[in-house]
Amino acid sequence: MPATLFDKDLRVYGSPSRYIQGQGAIGQVGRLVCDLGHRAIVVSDKLVLDLIGDQLTACLTSSDTAFEVVEFNGNLLQDTASQLKELYVPSVGDVIVACGGGRAIDTGKALAEIVKAPLITIPTVASNDAPTSKNFVLYDTSHRLVEVRHLPKNPDAVIVDTQILARAPKHMFAAGLGDALAKFSEAQACAKAGGVNMFGAAPPRVALAIAQCCEDTLLAHGTSAFDVAGSGVVTEAFDASAEAMILMAGLGFENGGLSIAHALTRGLSLVPGAKEAPHGYQVAYGLCVQHMVAESPVPEAKLDLMRHVGLPVTLAELCGRPITQGDYEVIAQATSNVQHLKNFPAEVSARQLIDAMQSTEALFSKTPENELG
Ligand SMILES: [Zn+2]
Image (cartoon, rainbow, N blue to C red; front, side):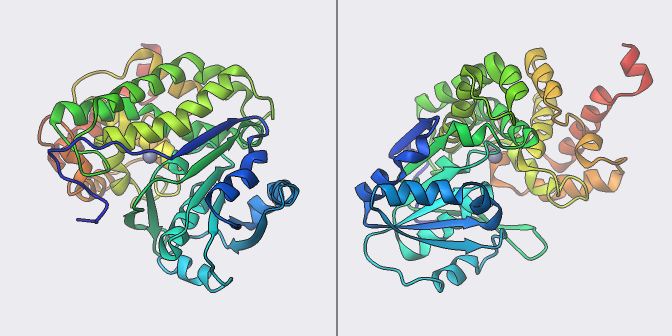
């Protein structure tokens, strides 16, 4: 058991120390670095640096904050962090500033772990809730997920500049929605099962309330937020959705626990089509399967939102190709050993997962017959 995990008979809550969201929020970065140390080590990839590198360095310079930029190639392998550490001389007072999409944020976490420095995350897309969480994932050279690691604590500060997020591609916003929309159902399943959260402990009651607020916010604002996503315009709906997708979803899963929807991503990352899809697309499909296993239909409003933003509700949609029996078997087999599966009120076998995936396909497939109905 990692040292950061607690006992199941305790309730444990964790979160970032500071969360700052708004248009131009990136301007706070210098102040936050100085609160936590002396020098910013900016971890980012070329794509992100081309987009906001000048803005970020101008913010640091204007607040007289020393910084170094450590660029990585966009892949997070098991040895990436130690290679990055070779690119600068670590010193007392360093603060890691991880800036970019999920991989850049996770790379910053991996570096913060080995140099034991405070961490500030600055997401540039609202595609997932990695910026708030203490977990990060490592991949092998074939892009297969090999390890989920836990930092001793959550990031010290999260800066969500909605002006930057509003320029990010629409499909990444949809991915963030897919990831976030599963959190309440998963936290509910975990609570009913007496399961454990990401601290290895019992979920505190507030976790369920946060996950519910996440879902309610997205059901109220997700459609209109998606419609402006990518335009650079920040509406009230966009601002609310960004908070739900990054802050509430992150706190909701880490404190409330994950269940079938996220367990399935282990299996889905093994099959062609699904493995290349964004995490949030995998989770959206996983949510449909979780509802099927629970024998409770996906609420109509949720389904409408998922369809509006183009999230997949069948495996064929997720993979972009016809599905074989072998696909179901590979997914179910790899999923059946995942710890999150225990956060469900009943035991779930590989056979049940296969049945649920097949039933989901039959229910939501766009056959001429179904379309007439
Ligand atoms: Zn997720």
